[in-house]
Length: 237
Ligand SMILES: C[S@@+](CC[C@H](N)C(=O)[O-])C[C@H]1O[C@@H](n2cnc3c(N)ncnc32)[C@H](O)[C@@H]1O
Image (cartoon, rainbow, N blue to C red; front, side, top):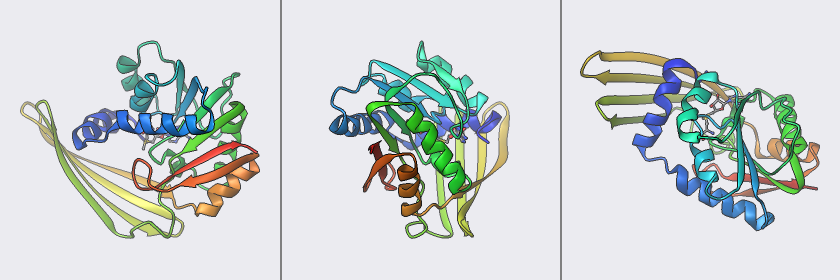
């Protein structure tokens, strides 16, 4: 998952598709400061290639990342300078320090397979939160908002690389089974086809809310957010 070729394509594709990480980071920073005006430190969990993190550094003095995939961490390095990214699993990590904000963006939380893992993750986040800290999570779709059979397709050009990504998402029980076909071409090596599969859990809104409560966090759900899936905001209860 998110290793090798797929990690290499990730940034180039989303940059080409126009995902506005700078604006998303500014919006999340504003949201954090509504709850904690003096927030100065932030941990971005499942930070991927570090693009939110790079922009969070414009809003917070002290930022760090946590990410499972070593390929994604490798790709993040050139754009992050001295910003630390630790390799770890969001379900169970121990950084021995606290932050004013813990974020988890772009539905990375949907990689949790069940409520037990969701609760373990929220407990890990709460453990790294200082007094008056804020947790912000961008969820995956809820079962009621997910469009079964959804097809997405984009072609982007980045330098001499052409990347096409077509995905199909279907509901299977309580997961979204997503199949992604990539066709990547450049003048020297020609065109290559890669297929990627993800199962992303369709947690109910109340399941997220219960997981926050189980970690002693009071939670608020904000409609909209970066991808239309909303944002959960948690503060110590
Ligand atoms: C959709 S990407 C989002 C990356 C980044 N937050 C962004 O907004 O571009 C999901 C990320 O979650 C990471 N991930 C998945 N399971 C994880 C886990 N258990 N612990 C930490 N990171 C995980 C993946 O490696 C991947 O980088």
